[in-house]
Figure 1 (cartoon, one colour):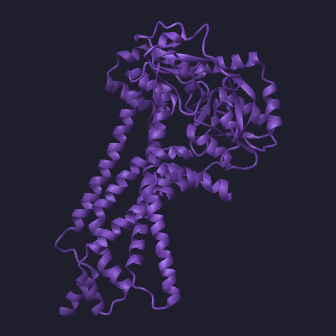
Figure 2 (cartoon, one colour; figure 1 turned 90 degrees about the vertical axis):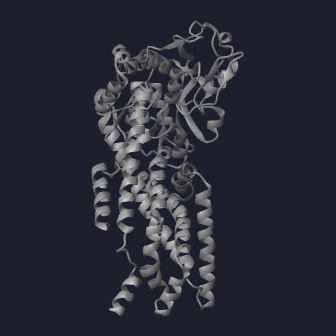
Figure 3 (cartoon, helix red, strand yellow; figure 1 turned 30 degrees about the vertical axis):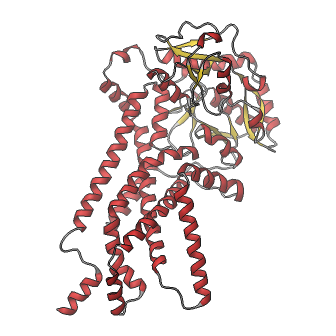
Length: 520
């Protein structure tokens, strides 16, 4: 079993190529979602001047990427894209994980408290996106959206503009534009506030959508309409960045944006409406198979390694907690203090969400202690210690389930505590907690989806990126759901097979074998 697990983990590391691109001084690390066309998107090759995405075999392109190239050239560096979810961009910048944010971000007053912004590199025009067959397709003014369910992206100025739509129902903000497009298409919302380039992209990609522009539109402050480059406060390169942006005229901005709109990933065409749901899924799988495979591999690697490491942590804590009190007063005091430390660790990691733990450990360690963690190893570490906290309690329950008489018998035979745990108790504990361990494994497979906040491109993040490119959300996420189900179903069946092998008449502990040999 040990050899099999080792071989599986080794194979996953080799297949995934967990070797991050060198962060040498000649690289400029640019943070963006790479999932917000035409500003930024993900593609499989370096066509049309795309730039490598750090830690993957993929590339990013779009208006933001082309601006990043011009800035990097001015600074004498090579651009390197760090793909990060929107909510993770500012923490990544302030913690030093990236050098700049070039992701269609507006320099609002709230953001200026944490981030220094360059001069504008694009001016945003807010518009509305609705369904062509909806009740608001013929709207011509802000007053025409009475009773409409409207939303926008969380953390952007567009969401605050909904209050200018008289009588509209302001829905909860959503994480990204992919979620909003899906909600609009399915009828969950009636409209969402967007920017003109994104709305044009959505309209051309999905024949059900329609962009609404107003002659007298939203009242927008200059700092909100402006899109600028975010930099760490105190970064002396901001003058060089502004010099690079000054070379790009307003006409050049419009020309570059129009060019990127033409070059963005091909979306669904008219024939897609005539395809069956199954044929749409097969086409998506065929076009994006390598992306899904890499995302699945990353998810499996993190969940498997984290579960195994968490099990080991849980077993070690279980052994420590059952150890007899040391006779030496100093050692007994250290033992008590360490026990308190373990209790605090268990309560904290069982009582906080993994997404919060990820942000604190990955970005907090860099910001507070100047410790730079590789994102993949950080993800494995986070899942491991999170699982360890749960497994420690599961192991404790497994130890308590062992008949106390076996402890007494082992002591009578002259066994030390370590021998008792290793030869008598732990073999039974492992057998007893196997179903719970399998459940933790399944949970970890699903919970890796929150790790996109620290730039880990796992299965969910991969699927969301694909969906923003093809605008076929239901088929794409159905594929993701099927992959998750296959993973969890397979793992469950493998663990049940192991459980049946252990649950046999010939299963004995080391102590039982010793007693049998003595009788013989």
